[in-house]
Length: 315
Ligand code: GLN
Picture 1 (cartoon, protein in one colour):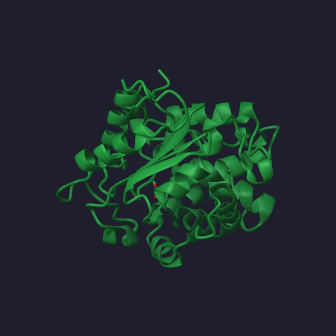
Picture 2 (picture 1 turned 135 degrees about the horizontal axis):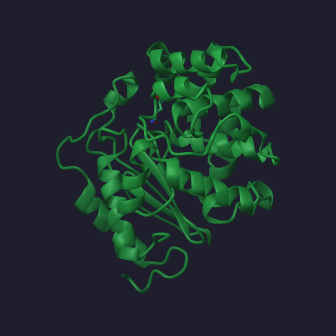
């Protein structure tokens, strides 16, 4: 364990991140990219970036940490946070559970068997319910997630890649089926196409590792750190989001990720992973090649090494 790494992001972090880039950047294309999102096929399979944002305001990064990536399901974490920021009583939780699914992120079977109540907000069915909640509350759900992310990251560059969104929308048979199941069970309050479009558009937001690490910092900081010094969420809400991230953030690989990395985290099929080290920092890592569960291969192994070398696991 590196003794220097005891508070915030110290100078030793830069050397560590450079080291992780050198040893985890793929030397040849590995893993796969999702077929349902045509735009992701064009991502550089050898890309690898990592950024660490400290609760003390410090930031370190290495590799391709300034290249925009498609945040995909990492957006589900921010759409949930935005929904809960408007829902202090937690009414949302009557429409979506907080249990690991043990099934792939786009699975249909469980939703039918469990009468249209998704297992958690981080699988696609649950995120569609959260998006529906935001449409009802704010109208422009995707635009509101973009605004939220701009505020949190301090970056005006955060935007929806409209080309990627249109291409995914045209290939969204499974998500459309999930949304129709939800509607059939009375767990969608807006039209299927409206909810689907907002969902796909917030998945198609592009951000860099540095922007994502900064945007997630409130999760490492008890909910503090919104624009103008306002809290983003209460400490209790933040604790609970981190709990759901730990148990559900990596879909049916949540157990394996907890075993290898030991941090709450959220992955996306764009190859990004945002992990939270409560009280200390956030880490965003990106490499496009995915494993069979849809999580970045190189990203997961880099995080495993990072927590092994720093002791930054919650366990
Ligand atoms: N937009 C993707 C989908 O709905 C997000 C999936 C993911 O990142 N796991 O399938």
